[in-house]
Amino acid sequence: MTKKLFGTDGIRGVANTYPMTAEVALKIGRAVAYLFKEKKHRAKIIIGKDTRISGYMLEEAIVSGICSMGADAYLMGPLPTPGVSFMAQSQRADAGIVISASHNPYQDNGIKIFSGDGFKLPDEKEKEIETFFFNGYEKYLPDPKNLGKAYRIEDAEGRYIVFLKNTFPRDISMEGMKIVLDCANGATYKVAPHVFWELGADIHTIHVTPNGFNINDACGSQHTADLAKTVLQKKAALGIAFDGDGDRIIVVDEKGKTVTGDQIVAICAKTLQKTGRLKNNTVVTTVMSNKGLANTFKAMNINHVRAAVGDRYVLEKMIKSGAVLGGEDSGHIIFLDHHTSGDGIISGLQLVATMLKEQKPLSELAKLVTVYPQVLINVPVKSKPRISSVPEIVNIINKTEKQLGAKGRVLVRYSGTERICRVMVEGPDKKTTSSHCKKISNIVNKALN
Image: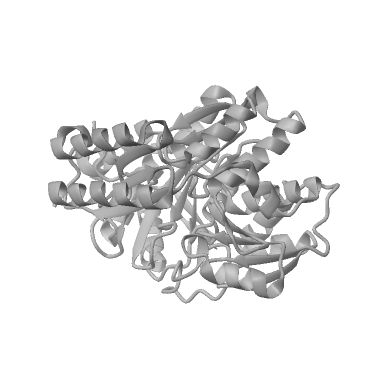
């Protein structure tokens, strides 16, 4: 059964346009309330959101759906996605719902769902929600005396801050360390500065004034130019850029150079291995991870497991292989010893802890991975037929891979959240890599549009 609503990271789309309408949100609220209901008690659903203007509309609709199905809604307000995951566990809730479109611009929004144990839902559970959504729910609606209630949790931020601080080693202090935080005018704008400041860092913040429309706008993990400039101006040890919902980071070193998710994973993996905490000597990344990372892990004798794109699939492989570290080059990193989901703040804390333990600047640590030149082109498409069924695309991929040989690779895949085909090429140099990527992208555009 192919999913109709859910992509690789929940449901996503343009706000006030299907599927991101109040009507859909209400029905999702009902579906979650019904499917997570336990016989012995009224279902308890945690709700958090980022700072988009459309969050108000969707939040109210989801609450209406939950209460109309006889469950109770607990509103957290703006809180990072991993904060909602944490609160779902802490509150012993039946489920957690996040209203966010992550790194997308303000006009988009999305719905992500966690189970009560803080993990994102498997495909099977998402299909159950879709079945309930499309097959009708009227017969399950309770009578008036069994309707649910809505509550607001005022101290959610404080609880989450304490949890985050406890993931940082007690024998290390950030005192005197200059750090720049770019909160993307998103969900981390309150929490992240408090955490790093309370741990002793000399922090400077940028993009911490959300207005509903400026989330991810020329800032955050997707746009690090402003962060790099500020790091150099402030002579900081590093800069950390979060995305809109706070589950990923991209980092800038003291020289203003970007440090990718792959490099962060490798840096932390080395420290965990050295201290005997890299369980099963295994790290999980995705098929999008740079070839240079694979070479690094091979040299370190680390078992490298690849998963499909999406932190959900990384987590599944981690649990299956017994790994405690996994991530994506985009900056989603999971430290399973600390949290059940990717958490940008925890990732930043673990990287800083490694820097302080090693007593080396980030630029030096980042040399661990020799990054192959990589070019990624996003091609907007009208439809998403199976790539293997389009001869023109298959032929150009095969031809390019033959030309690159062992010096590169090609990956063509659809985005799970947007009408986009991602064309990624790695090669021996930037010019060659870019040329191949443009050729493939042009053929993808002609074949699919």
